[in-house]
Image (cartoon, rainbow, N blue to C red; front, side, top):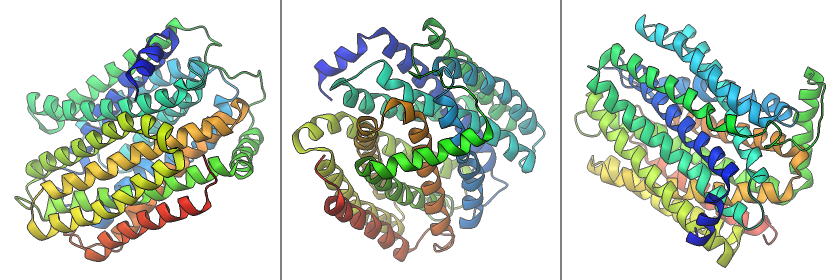
Length: 423
């Protein structure tokens, strides 16, 4: 990421406001995820199995992904600035209900439904942020913005998660600590809405004044988004490559959870496992940051496709070797390296794919396409989780799974190189 380009986009006032909303909102997302993870996945009373982890991810990711088509069509009709204001405020209110359920030690269907709602509203926020970006920066600055904003958001979410774990400990741990973290997340969502209030209502588009938000229009919009990706093969194949990488990411997430809880260090110690998983998450976030820093310059030098192939290829080697070494030695550091490698690939590939989609798809369809992209990412993540859940041992030690992840990444790299036209 060229320093001159970075300085240029940061001089744009509307971009700074959009950027602030993303950073604050995703930091609040991290706080929320920390509260839920400590309550559900890292509770001393629960020993996770592969299937239980898969069920948790399915509840958190797959159902609310289906909100994507509705979010996309509505984002191409509603003022995106208004969506970014009110969606964040709605999330803050919903967190009150989640805090009440946590205090009641309710980890059943009621919690799942309320979490589904708050994360569903979050789909509007993330899709709106992506669809709004071309309205504040354009031309060669767009690739730099695509590298900076989602990566910074990922880092902000990681920092928020780490802060959440620390806040929970300072608050005495347990359910009370989780509620304190949820309160901090609620404040974060309110703050995330504030920068958008300084923009004009029409500043972030859409460019047209389409009306008539009916169910039929939503379904038609879903179909339109699919058709647009089909008609623009560069964008469609870029989305497909990200889907394959996210399957691998989902698989590695399950392996990391199972290894930390059931095999590495003090097996069964929830606090130790949580600390180890935090280090793994930090490794992935650091890799994502490096990917964002390097990718813009590399794409200008090598092109989007060649760079995507290179980073997928390195992950195809590093990820299976790292997970295998961690399982054999019962050491944490090889797993951190694998997470770093996959985080690097994930962010670099997403930057390239986002830019190709924005370059190929017109603004009138951009909200729908990015909402579909969001569905593809989350659906693929859950697919990877499910595949590993039904093939890996509860200990997380499973050589065929490690090899399968490497083969998937390698085949994706080869196919991307073979079938993508020059981009």
